[in-house]
Every structure is written in C-alpha cells, then in structure tokens.
Length: 153
Length: 153
Length: 153
Length: 153
Image 1 (tube, rainbow over the protein chains, first blue to last red):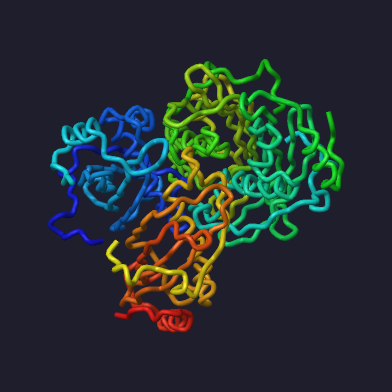
Image 2: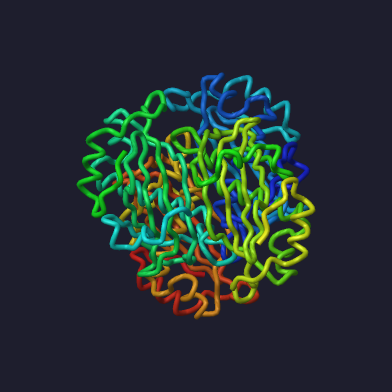
C-alpha cells in the first residue's frame, strides 16, 4: 500500500457507508471472513453508493451509455470480521480521472478499521467496452455527495 | 427424498464422474463444506457431463436452440467433506422427460457417499425460455453414454 | 417434491420472514440468481429465525449443548430472482422430530413465490456431533413463535 | 501497483503455476469473472504452492507451529476470464520478510496476462496468532523452489 499515513482513511472522511452482517458462508475454518469476501462486501456497498448518487447500477449507467469495469484493487487487512458481526463499509471517490474512478473504502466494526483499500474502475462505453470520459452528470453527483473533494484529472 | 432404497445410487450405476478438490473458501467454521456448495460441485461436474456427451454448455445447447434451467433439486447429506478432500461427483440422467432431464448425483470420498440427490432441469427454447422437447441429438447422446437406461417419457 | 398441493406454502403460513437484496456476485450469465445461492439465502434467513427464537446461532445452541447439521434439502424453482431484487425468505418449522427439525421455506418477490423447499436439520451433541433430542427450550420457543403448529414426533 | 515495469511478472519468472477452469458460479451478468473470484483462484493455487513446497496447508504449517494470515493484497485487471476458460495461476515468493511472505501472482490465459498482483501473508504463531519469524524449513524450501531468488529481510 503506497498511501502515506497522513492520507489514511478515517471514518470522518467518508460521506457514505453501508452496513451489513457477516454471513456463515463467508467465514472460513479459521473462524474469520475469507479474505476475498471483503471485496464482495465492497461490491455490495458500492452498489448502494451508486444508488445514493442517483445512478443505480446498471440502469443508471446504461442510461448514460456507460458501464464500469474493475481495473485495479488493493487492500490492507488490519483486523478480522467474524460470523454475525455487523460491519460498516465506508466508500468515497478519492479521484475522478479522465475515464476512471478511484474509490477508497474502509471496512469497520464500530471504530475499528478491519480493512482499508481502493478499487479503481474504468468507465467504458456500454457497447464497445472501451474507456470513455466520466459522464458529467455522474461527476457532478459525486462532487455533490463527497465530504472530501476528490482529486480530478 | 422419495427414492426407494432399491433405487439408491451406488457408484456402479454411474457411467460418469468428475473429481475435484475441496477449496478453503468452501469450508465453514464447523470445518466442513457449507451445504450449498455441494450444489456448486454438482454444477461443475454437470458441465463436464454435458461436455462428455458432446454438448458443451452453453454453446452445444445453443446450437440445438435450447438452454437449461434448474426446476427442482434435492439432496441428502450423509457425510461431510473437509478442506483439501478429493471427492468424486458422479452423475447420471435418471429420466428423460418430454421437456425435462432428471440428473441423479452422488458425491463420494473414496467409497463413502457424502451426498446424494437429484437435479431436474427444464429444457427451454433459448430465446423464449419456454419449455420445449428434449432435442433428439441430446437424447441419443445420453442413451449412448448411460450404463443404466434412463426412464423416458 | 412430495408435498400435496393443499400443503403448499402460502405466505400466510409463515410467522417469520427476512428480507434481503440480491447481490451482483450471486447472479450468473443468464442474468438470474445461480441456483445454489437460494440455499445461501435460506441460511442467512434461518440465522435470523434462530435469533428471533431467542437462540442466536451458534452461541444460543452451544448454551444448550447442541449444534445443528444439514441432513436433507429440497427446493422447487418456480421463478428467478434477478440482480438488485428485494426478496423475502419466509421460514417456518414444519416438523419437530425426535432429533431433527424440518424447516419449510419460501422465497418470494412481492406475492410471487420464486422458490419453495425444505431443509431438515439434525440436532446433535455439540461435542460428539451425535444426534440428541431437540432441547425443550428450543421446542417451546418454536411452538410459541409459529402460526401453524408444527408436527411433532 | 508499485512494481517498476522491468519487474513486471512474465511467465518465465514463475517456477510454479496451477491450472483451473472457470466455473459458472464465478461469472457475473457481464459474462466475465466477478473480480473477487480472482483472489479465490489465487487461494486455490497457493494451496498447491504450499503443497509443492512440502508444507501442505494447514498441517504442514501447524507442524511448524505457525499459521498464515492475509495482510495485504493488490491486483491489476488487464483482461477478463470467461466461463469455461482454462487459466493458469502462476505464483512465486517475491520477498521473504522477517515474519511475512510476499507472493506475486499472475493469472494467464495462454500467453495473455489477465490479472497480476501480490498477496502479503503474515506468518503467525498458530496459537496466539502473533507474528513470528518465517520458519527456517519453509524459507529453505522456498529458496530451493524459486527460479528468481526472493528478496530477503
């Protein structure tokens, strides 16, 4: 993880969070959430983030002529969620690129950060799957929602 | 389970079986495979069963103008698979209906039957998703492969 | 499925239901929920059912000295859930056996039944995993909750 | 991803690779593998990597008194795997730290790199889950297997 410590996500940086409860199917024989499932949690929460922005996936994106594809992901595991834990998945757009969105996230149990990371999406033409500019209405909705202004290209 | 005991699957009834190894992600905090994952194993194995029949899914079915949809499933859990176990998923078509296929399966670890059950598929028009007759080439391939003759409608 | 039509689950038979939203990870290339995931939904909902009974899993069971293991499962697929659908998973104990519980379930989208089925659990000693009698406090809690009286052994 | 381009994984850097076939359950409505599943593939392959090293997980680690826990993960998505694709998951230990192992991986379809990334594990005491030194027999086995010498602490 390359983020300097001064840029590490604290809960107050996030305008958006979504709560969910850890399922039995997501926990492994060590008694902790199997690590790829934290990215499933991110995906569940980002679905709600798009909805909160007014662009429910996929229809809100299709209406803009675009789709999103995962381009890069990274996470640090600082703690472990366990069965039946209620956790919060906090998401914010950290950077709006020319044809990409970098979404920082933190997964918390109460005040404890269990996982923090970042997902980078490419915004692509819905038909050709080629990168296109981030649609202006989406950019505007993100800027309106976020507490910490995203970097922009 | 409605199958009479005389009809219970023994390994010798199955002309087809596929081996796989239990993944860490499939095992729960009890240390045993989380029960819905046995149906994932069935799905992995039935994909190979279709391939063995000469109709790899989905292209082999699309070429016949059809697709399959799960209609009913049942299973008995007689034992538990554990992490890293190598198990065999044995499949046979027990019945060829007018527009359905009933596939019996048994999941074994060596000679021990861990799970046995049956999946019923509807054969449907690929476009409308409405039930259609089981295509003759598929029926013929099943009859040619199976050791125990399937019931037919 | 052997249930006579007069015994088919209607929503009014269920005192308990739990709502959830279909995740992207649960939907397959056909655009519908991959069939084993309906059993994951059942598992998520039965966790809430145990909680509603006053015996949150696993601690509420461990306190009684028991654990539960899947013994048999069956389901009929009558319709398909799609991404982002909000669905209800209704559960009721249909039968309290000597050392087993048969839980009927229905998965609905509004008034439409998508899946109905039944899971049979063995109640086992937490340490030896051998079948034991259904603990009296659990039996009493089930009888108090259910709208339709369960069959009893 | 912080790796300089001269250090980017090419297949020849990897002494170890494991092949698997993409399952229906792993593919999403876009027709491509849902991104967290690439980490499941990594996990399946690293299990085989430990086995190839002579330390099958978990028993080979338990015998050394240690266990491993995910500490950080990152990946770039360069292409998409599709249903029924046969893919290779190549793994190498890039760095042996004092109490950590950094495993670089690449997921390929033929010569095409679909995903590349790195998983960092903490090596911990099996009982206390506190970081401990990488056991000497494990270190020696890694050094004997790898084609490109890992960095060492």
